[in-house]
Amino acid sequence: MDDARVARRGLSPRLWLAGGWLVLALLATIFAPLIAPQDPLAQDLMLERLPPFWLDGAEPGYWLGTDSLGRDLLSRLIFGGRIAFIVAFAAATSACLLGSALGLIAGYFGGWADRIISRVVDVWMAFPPVLFAILLVAVLGTGLSSVILAIAIIDWTRFCRVIRAEAMSQARMDYVESARIAGYGRIGIMLREVLPNVLPSVVALLSLEMGIAVIVEAILSFVNLSISTDDPTWGGIIAEGRLSIHQAWWVLVFPLITLILTVLSFSQFGEALKARFDPVLR
Amino acid sequence: MSVCLDIRGLSAELPNGQRVLRSVSLSVQPGEVRALVGESGAGKTMIGKAVLGVLPKSVRIVEGDMLIEGEDLGRLDAKARRTLIGARTALIPQDPLTALNPSRRIGPQMTDRLVRILGWRGERADTRIRQLLDEVQIRDPERVLKSYPHELSGGMRQRVLIAAAFAAEPRLIVADEPTTALDVTVQKQILRLIAQLQRDHGTAILFVTHDLGVVAKISQKVSVLYAGKVVEEAETAQLFAAPQHPYTRALIAATPRYTDPYASLKPVDESVLAGLTAEIAAADKDWRPGHG
Ligand SMILES: Nc1ncnc2c1ncn2[C@@H]1O[C@H](COP(=O)(O)OP(=O)(O)OP(=O)(O)O)[C@@H](O)[C@H]1O
Ligand SMILES: [Mg+2]
Image (cartoon, rainbow over all chains, first blue to last red):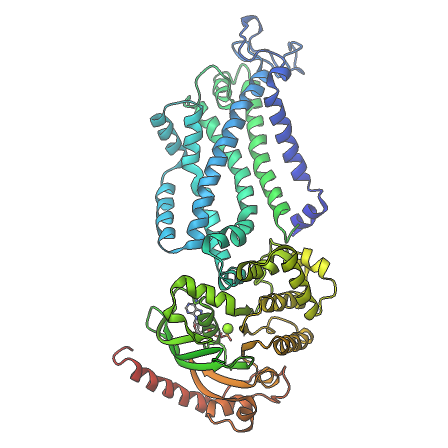
């Protein structure tokens, strides 16, 4: 209830914090070539393992320090965000469309459609997701599109389960019955009466899923199964940072903070948005 | 003029063979209010849902016919049946909150029936809706039409639903305990409004209630239902003056003053219930030997 009141006043701090970070990160990655202080790929052995700006031995222009090959960490994080956001939007949107559509059909129509879809979801969920992802990428081959495809193929079930349950309770509502009495068809009712009521959950899940996609992509690049080598990715930077943790902790810590902030922001943003979307809370 | 609603020997059962309706026969003449009274679980709502073609999937009609203005629903294909039910009937539901979609504004929700049944849109539909809002004494239609359901009081929502039910001029309205979810002061107004619109529009109503006081106020005929079986049927005045069935007598005796529409039922005497149970067991035996 507190959330509802805050949302109505339009002052929800978590909406602003989460949204703020996401907008900042997104803009930075879009305008990466303009913003990044250095070339993210340029190696310079004279500059290896420079510390962040507030420590002794820091060089101006290398704000967060450099890695063991002398590449600028901040620039690599900014460019790495490109992959993260592309994967987040593309994979989460695909998973959302597929899962929500099937969930809506299963929940609203019930019967054999529901039995088939629910069965598939059960089987799907029996696989541990990370293992499933690694397996899929191994089969599909590494590369941006197979990472996106793998995440969508694995995670549509999250949408399907939640939306199915909500559509099911919607199907029992009296306004659905009234529309049937008036003579409206089932698909029309599903789109006009049911869909608007499950939309807030779809939006919240979509945002959450973007965060999950960022993590999965990081895990895949961490085990070197994401997109090919050269372009920096958050997972790739974390993997490298792990190797030099004792000489240069910042190469591990900054990408981790970036990752966690982004993932948290996506989930919080989704929740706050859901409260906004809900007509009863609005 | 043909009978508005004619139900003949309607029986329905659950998948486990348990019967929820037992050879129900009842008819509603054009422009007449027929009350359907009985305690909770008697099957009042089931009869309404059967007429409107929205029975739960688990409930199966096993016998009987339903005719709306002489047209046998059983002889129509699904599409024709939907069209007929849509054009000739409407529902005033029990709970005005769950009967309105929380994420749609009142205006479009009210025009839905006009669009579907009469093909009226835009100005024409809008004029009609405002006319009905006036009839249910809503004085600020502008605000109401723009509102979401949760922004209106229960009484306002029920007025909106009554207006929507009458808007496309159905011949028959099923009103399923339309005042039960409202508080007492509002109940009276809503009941009066339904009676008023019913007279003005000449609409027949199948009025479901468990309240004999309401029956006395609004209906011309009554059917008393117990465990899915019509145990007595009479003109309303006749029923109160000279109830024939022991269950009806018990119901009337259990209602302190049946002229008070807001007195509730008291439990019926045990011996009457025992008699009824035997009666129903006997009927079931005739119905299908060897089935329970
Ligand atoms: N969806 C359903 N599936 C199966 N059985 C049901 C379903 N809904 C109700 N029933 C059963 O059907 C019988 C009749 O229920 P119904 O809702 O018609 O009673 P009612 O007379 O309207 O009671 P109330 O005054 O409580 O509304 C009851 O025994 C009930 O348990
Ligand atoms: Mg009922």
